[in-house]
Length: 256
Image 1 (cartoon, rainbow, N blue to C red):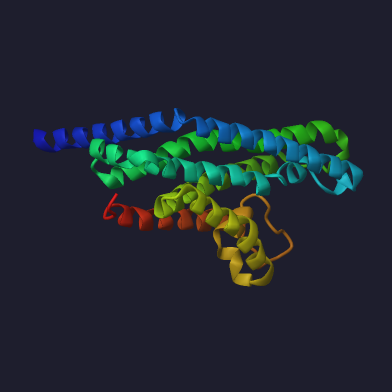
Image 2 (cartoon, rainbow, N blue to C red; image 1 turned 90 degrees about the horizontal axis):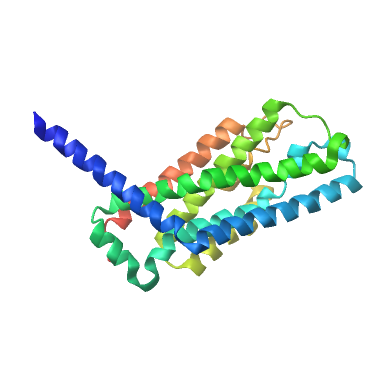
């Protein structure tokens, strides 16, 4: 009767050690904090620019949430880059071989890396999103359109989840490509060029990761066929899980 319990404890301890190791690598990587810090600064600069533009226009038709989160479509690049760096840093100098020697169960190591990234990214995404809204609200004051607390909470939650899932997708693509520059070019090309082009020309594009993700925090209220925030969250989560599962299956077989 003790054998199953011992095996369970051993697997649980192995998983905890794998997560601790991946967390240690991620938080000790200077690029992690440089990327997150730079993204926060850029987001605040863009929020100021959008707020100034709003003051020069008809701010009464837009809320601080709408204006303060407009910069996220650009600031998401920082989370894309962080996801890629998290995955591709392992392949610099052959570090991946050392990692897999210490953690031979590749699926566990891959899962632990993504979980560590999620733990770091979620609070960073929340801070980034909230900072732009708070800054915009402080500058606009009473000139902005009123907004309910439910809308604020829903939008900030949607942005946080969107940025976190985008970082996880980027890490999976980074592990698939295994080259930092190539992965960044592919992802940024999709999020900033291919995705917007398809969104404007193809109705089916609403099911793609970026468009579905945008619906999580900028829902289209006057379009009955548009994806709702809940549907967007389900779609983006499904894309993330499917991509991670696809990559981890190959990851277990690749020659490192």
